[in-house]
Image (spheres, rainbow, N blue to C red):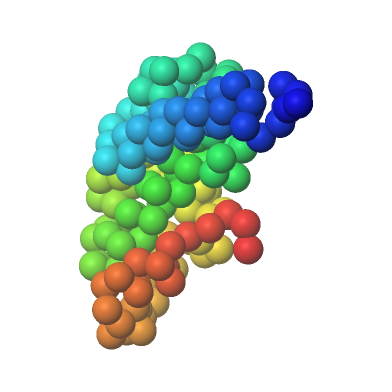
Length: 147
């Protein structure tokens, strides 16, 4: 006779469905971040999209994606800023285009994630990224906090 933790039991099926539902809700919030990165987003707004409380959302997001929702948002913003800087946009314009409200905080976060200041990133050559297919360049130039 199968116990309550047996793979085919009602309890284990409900747990699997809850995990699937949780991941679907988290994807909705992550999609919001990817789509509206330049908008003023905060954790409560993201949590509402995921149908969770802010604290529960933050824990579940970090467990699913390996970083906090705010860190994910900032990484997306820096990723977009890097693309703008490669196109020759000024640091100030890139800062405002990605939704950052403080040039100093933007520069600090950019330096933390990209490993160099926005000005030095903008001024150096990006011929290699421009020579490769866009889909490859997006993967190889994506910033990461965890190297």
